[in-house]
Image 1: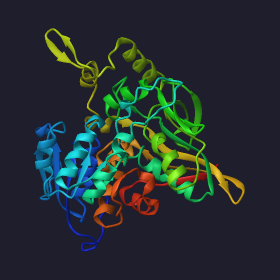
Image 2: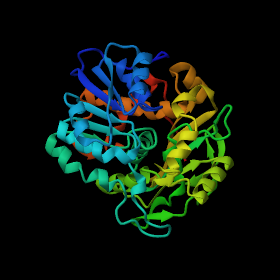
Image 3: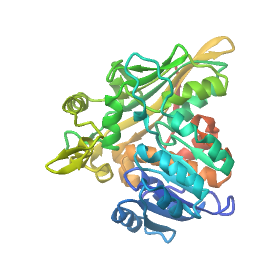
Image 4: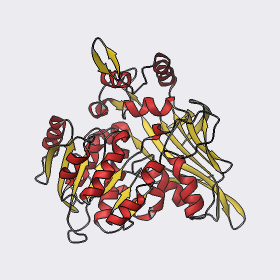
Length: 417
């Protein structure tokens, strides 16, 4: 890995372990590089259905610890065999494969971590109350993971991930939480492209065209896509950006785990992301044309999903990091009460795309998601994450995460509201 990161704990602090990164895309390659250069893992398997992609990443990392392996995330039996002897599987594939991977981990006795779950599993229309948020599909595996003595860490990227941890940090300072607002801002662009997402195109299309989840009046509810447009002032150099309600992970867990499990309460929670006008227009048009559908159709005798076609014609996010310009800021604004007085904090992380690529060889988008997953893996190996079962990031102690961020060139910034 390029750059000047020294992420490792001293040798001997933890038991040396074996890890697998499943899905070597823009984000998975970040996590793989960090773990390959850590002292905590003596073997890192780069697994992907595209073996050549895994081999290419192996060559780039150029470390004796690293090996490439072909693994199909749709094949549970095959994954069980591939996971044998692995202590921790880090899931970097698109979320629709999560539950098969989790099942394979339980059978193979390997702990698990992912960066997101499948929010598309809920089809509640706008204006209605959600009976069971999609995260339930992950959480219902809690008993199986506990029985096997395994950790099932879900949503451990940047957002979700750090955003949940930042919300927990703020909540820990309060007697009562009133609202949690997760905000994702990016003023960047990709040089030479009019439309080029820096993360999975499938995920982008899926999330923004679905009704958006929010929490209010004691229930999880749905809003119309692209609703709640407002101007949000992100800290400089990101600045003022238009943000929209988008379906996401954080608002499915924060009200329950911070509000109920930790006993802080939560009256309202939502997620909004900054989207440029050209993004909004392009994605709306895809929806109007039906090109957002994951269902396969027959085209000249060939079965293909329209969304896969769109993703195929867009640039691979793992190949355009050097062309990304601008800055991003992701964080959580939390308001509540302490000693009878109103208090509030905005806690966030901030990165510059060009600087991040120069130092680490990745766009800020990919790097900011891959780093928290790697931190979780390192803390797990160091014995600082001991929970068993399936749990979201806000159930972890924030302090070790925040302390480790600067070692990877990331930060945790905050201001009072």
